Image (cartoon, rainbow, N blue to C red; front, side, top):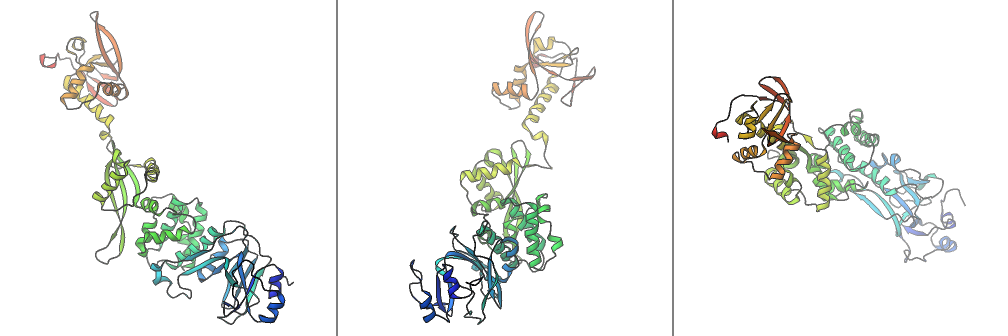
Length: 489
């Protein structure tokens, strides 16, 4: 036998099933049956000049149909001991043993992309992983029926199993080719590359270096400025400019579903509905107490030129609505006019939890809008309205705030404070009021006495600056000596 198989004898000696073909079509019937076999003498007698087709029940053939794949395949597909092609289409077939039963797979552009693939010899087909006994490939030792050129080996060591995930690795080369084919010809090229990087950052475990190389290789194949695009993984991860499918949709006009279908080739976007939602819901921004802005990327058609554009919008929402899928979808539609695909409850919760815990605080964030700050404000207004007295009799008899000079503290009556809150239409259950007094005001209950009688109060501590001023929680409290009239009881 020759070192590499170049005739029917060599292929039969290797134990392979081969089919005689004429112009790419089998000359015999029943070639897909499990026990199909042609002995050497029959082949020599009836099929000596036939093309040799290897049946692919025990092998897998990477058939490259688009030249762009060849620019990438050597980066991602490793360890092939059997490569062949022909004049006019060299290095177009990679052959491996297929004991692991890798399935048949076509990497094909959607029909929607026709304007970008219509001039290629094989149209929308990028490449195929061809397997199973119903398929075959014309191998070295044959004259190609269409080009009339010999199919020949370019490398032959052995036909061995692939070491790795062949579907994903071929998918990387096919995706690279597809993204090169739809690469913007002018303008927005940087945004396009940033969007590719953004998709991989958000949806894969690729390192920055892997993303840098992936994007820069596509830019080089598209005759773009490689230096400008060489750090997309590194720079995109550290900025807010993480474009995604929405941006590629905007730049190319192709549908979300078909763009995501390309990225399925490398194992991402298995759930397209979730990914559309991920891209539409950009981030959560905290504005104040239980109030948030949710930033959305909204696809919208420009009325002037009918081009699709991504418009930034945000909705105003409270925490309860943020946690409720139905309320959230309704508010997105009413406030931002965007239709977000429905996810199941588990997917929605997982996505929103991640975005919530990475939320930003608004530049317009007003601390006074927090509930705790509001409660402090109510208390300070209470002290200002009622006054703070240096005579403890005011506390014991009239239930008004009292300043203890020796301890730089203010004592107040909880019932009196509660009445003031009710006057201002602030209604709290007693247990909630006590909790806020303890946690927000940092007050402690004091079972004191005045003239040998019980005088229960709550105490807050501050820092006295002069005879008429106490600093508490960064706020100035005026200390007065006036006595209360009957209206203060």
